[in-house]
Image 1 (cartoon, rainbow over the protein chains, first blue to last red):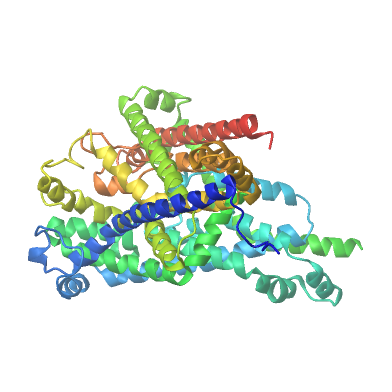
Image 2 (cartoon, rainbow over the protein chains, first blue to last red):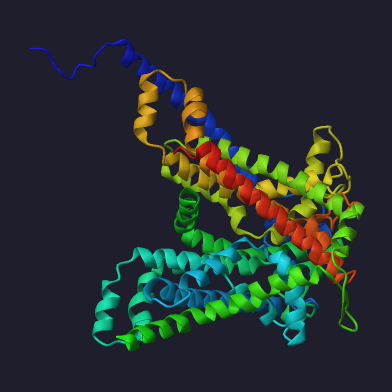
Length: 295
Length: 295
């Protein structure tokens, strides 16, 4: 009786075995390189945080520190007490990002509903013309937008930041793609039961849209929070300023002398992004990965 | 039945209206206005429009600064595409192996974190890291005997510093996309290759890279289109300096429009940018047809 489970001593098996060992050794080497790279990627953030914890007088002291020497919140106190209304800017950033996100979600979901669940003359033309908008870089529209909004008096207000950002053909496209992949039987039976289009949209279609709504919320919120060009051009006064431009004016009003205050400001500004990322890491990465594969 | 159809059409129009009206006001009309503005000489004080034909284009095409900004932008693009796509590919290959989950989590977190944080915020951090006498990077370069590098003050280095930041910030995005593409390669293909005794280098260059070539092409195009609009980091780091060494096309456009008040020439510059972007997209589509059409 020969055992059939005996590993066959063939050249192929031996080669496979040695290949596995080579791969294993290589794995460790690659892993070390990857970990060193990962630390390098994070160092600027560590430096930012450690510097924000230094007293203003020692901010520039070398060697630089990447972990706080001790917890000192002086620069945070100074930041909030500074003549530049940092809290106001923080609030502006939040309001602009939140209103933009809600606006984009509602308008794009409605448009997606129209494009995927109803028939009306010119539907394909309207949709195609919106897709064309995907190609237009935002910088191109600055000049006409600025003078258009100036003529109706909303330049230098948060609306100058919200309204242009609420126009988002990508969101319409993503929502429509998702809605098309969903079965339409529920909507049809509700329609037969005599429900209005609004009821169908609000009660049946919208609740199915969880995944694209979540993905778009993260994309739209963070890109609004991060936007620099629009507020730089459209906003002059502190009352309507958002964080990226606010920190720039903080820097020019304090000069380089207030390095730790500026780093405190950047730390506080990036905090929400870190939180969003830690909560939704897997989800964010999966949605990005799928855009690349599907093209 | 006609009434039902009419009701459906009305609902369709109403649902598409919010998104489409926003699209018209904040994207389509400004775009057309941009085209219009480019053939006028605009007096901003009297709001006086004088038709000048193609003179604005003539002006920017004979302005050496315009060509400098174009050269800078293309230098930035070529280096940032090589850096982002090349390093992204290498790191994706490195990450594409069986790793313990906690390590994978940490790696993914550190490589991806900068992607989510805006260029504006991280530019403040890098501005001080790159500082010539007081910066962290030069401190360590002095320690190992290399001495000071004028990261942001030497006109031959400054653009390279901008590119370093760009790659640091964006490489994580490309890693995720490439990693997803690599993991989508059919296992049978890999197994067939390993049975034939192909080395991992051959597998990488003959199977994996050709297989994900469409994704690589997509990423290169994406990075190019993004690079044509480079603005935020340069505005914060060097404001176009030293001299004009880092001034980009969008910076040229913004300063023409909002500092010099030359709306016509600024619009002409913006349109030139749009044309270049369209050409890039067209070239990408042609390459995709020719080389990848078979699949």
